[in-house]
Image (cartoon, rainbow, N blue to C red; front, side, top):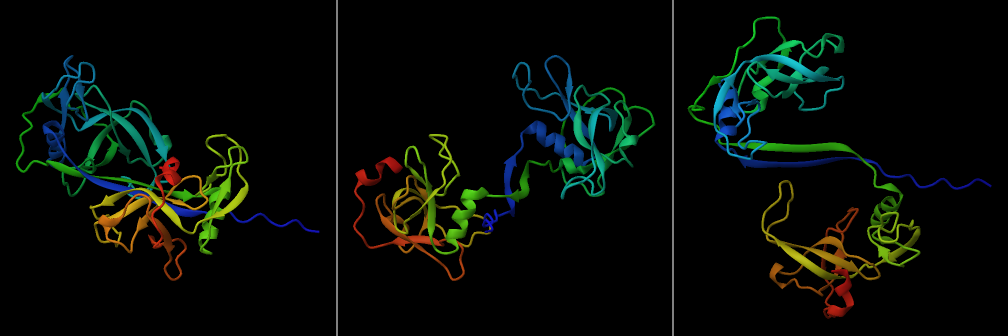
Length: 319
């Protein structure tokens, strides 16, 4: 007799991306505008040290600092690490070194890429210079990278007023993390059940709470959960929020309601969108059921069942 093979655990690429717009203070504005103009600026701290990149508050005294100075576009590598597999949107698409460079006239080091033929060509203490980007917009990428340099140094810091025409006053900071995600045994079973329009949780053998989605272990008792329990499909809105800002790439008109829903038989609430009812009529205790789209692998949203609202005492422990 042959033992049955365990179910395949799911794996899929996942991208977490959060671009946001931030305004710049006078020091950061001068620094980025200076890069656009081919000038590297630092700031003097209360003890006379020059920080590059500049900050607006002294790291020792926390006092506001505004005394800008221009430093050289040449410098010295203080430490480095070789990157043999560049990722998308990194400074170079061929292997390169990440380096900390103390520019001539600065007392702190700037992190950037060094274009070198291989790790044997990089060393602490080597001299480098800025390679400016062909097109500059007022961002750290205006420094395309550093490159090896054997010429004269850039001298000491020179006072600078930080005044530029058409100064950069804001930037879009793009945070992105892409990786392969595996939900594990418990959530793989949960996802596979959803494709069959069933919601499955797991019961803790100690406290008997049913976790949906399951986590493979009880976070309260610290024991494994393997006893599968089908819950729902109906549930109760325990709390909710009204969303008034439209998310990028999400084809849902605002305002809409996103709620915590305690499915019947579950020991905690899951998240879901409420539809089929005006947003201002959603309420705690509302009884709802899932709505599936053709071919959908999870509920598109939840709608009212038409049942009377649940009594508060029936769901108060799940809020």
